[in-house]
Amino acid sequence: MKSLKNAQTPAHSSPSFLRWGLLGLVLLISLLLPWTLSPLWIRIATEVLMWAGLAQSWNIIGGYTGYLSFGHGAFFGVGAYITGITMLHLGLPFGLGLLISGMAAALMAVIIGYPTLRLRGAYFAIATWAFGEMIRQIATILEITGGAFGMQLPAYLNLPFFYYLFLLMTGLIYLTIYLLLERSPFGYKLLAIREHEEAAEMVGVDTVMIKIKAFGLSAFFPGVLGGIYAYWVTYIHPDSVLGAVITDFMVVMAFLGGIGSLWGPFLGAGVVQLVNRYLWLVWGEGTFYLIVIGAAICAVVLFIPSGIIGLLESQIFQPRTAWKEIRKKVKW
Amino acid sequence: MLLESRDLTKAFGGLVAVNQLSMTVEKGTVLGIIGPNGSGKTTFFNLITGMIPSDSGKVIFNGEDITKLRPHRIARLGVGRTFQIPAPFSKMTVLENVMVSSFIHTSSMKIAKKKAWEVLEKVGLDEKADFQVLNVTLEDRKRLELAKALAIEPSLLLLDEVMSGLTPVEVKSAIHLIRQMHRQGLTIIIVEHVMDVILSLCDRVAVLDYGRKIAEGTPQQIVNHPEVIRAYLGERYRARS
Image (cartoon, rainbow over all chains, first blue to last red; front, side, top):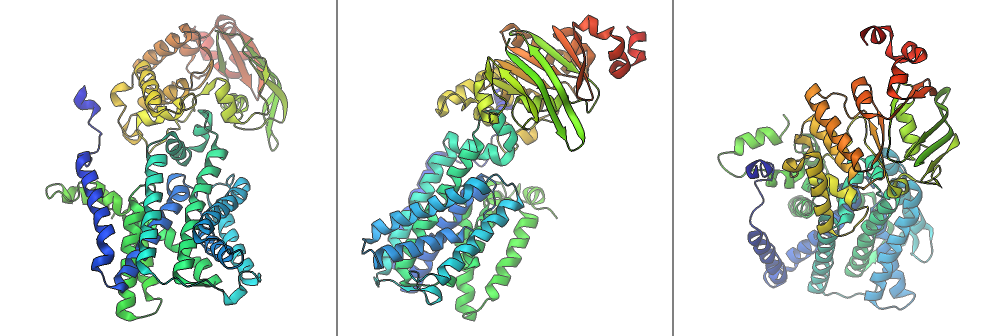
């Protein structure tokens, strides 16, 4: 009976000391990175960290809960602008500005989530997309945001500072997801909602409340990250922090890495951003990379819907089973 | 009286699925509901559990008007249900599925896991606790439906065709299971097409046709009721018995 019980436990579950060791190693490398890299690559590493945080934030509502938000970039932009406004016009310290940004983004998510999270499928996606567009239009016409010209923040040119700040924030995001979504009732309820919302209600899950909380949480982090980004690049305008491309990248990275998983968005962000920057270094400024990434996404959605993480978690890297696993995972 | 519906009505467009249905269920009894397809049995369940709003009428549970309550509140009051087509959380394990129900009473992972295990043992699914739901058979999915409903520790259990699609042997063990739960004091409403199940489990049987109750009584009264034979059982059933 014991063997039967364990028949379905995934074979990939490596011993926990190995996992923690690997995690420790990655953290150590991340901490030492700024001493070994050129400023260009520190910049790229910083971007990877930021996108890893953003993709994971989207993953809370899009991956774990199954509600595709196509307006998530708005929370990033709102965070960027609010941090700018609190520093420029209210003279508040940067840290406090970040906190206000995160809370404002979360509050917005709660307000728009209350009516729209009752809409399933495409309707929620369209509603959030419209919300994102609305925020962009508002930022373009308001005086306090600098309108279409944008906003100049006080300059603080200290690349390692921003690298470590993003490392801290993204680390916090992943820790939160691990504790709250992978190891607590809240995460189980989110999965239940994603898998069968009505059945979840029948066993006492307050689906509306849980979804609103998840949406608020998934907006809080982009708000903070947006604030850090604004202070880092010192100049923001509606297209740079509220462009549709911000949302697109969050979605694309989460999907490529594997939605609904802890490390998927991180891998997705790393791959997409590195490829993106590599193509940029080779071909210079352009939009060709979007075509490459678009093609990659089509391939992932069609052939490996569980993303990179799904491939890694299968036994694909054990020589004997590799071919069998590929046949199983990849739909021809 | 544990559950009472008063003149409950629900129409979908021009179709009146449940028509002024009044029904009472005494504590500790098993009520069977039978009727042709589309006679409003599942809709009746959906109205009780708050899954769809009623057009008019009332549902009283344990003396409390639950007509307007949201489904999760009704579940917390102690109404559990199973779905006719099993509705598991597919990408979770069997144990995790049941744990979601256990969270209704506790927010501790440890206690939820322990309680879920107990329920799985009760329905005979403990050996498959770590299986992904995608990998279990239809019978086990039906058992899982039951486990999920039981794990909220309900006082009223609504079973929607838990036997359909099962083999005679599986039906027998399911009947045994339901009888056991009934002995432990659970009040049960069963919607079922398999007459043997209704006859061997129910204290009372209600017959629905076009959303109306056309008969109610003991199983023996029901199988001899001319209206019921005409609308549902058919002449051949009378001939056989």
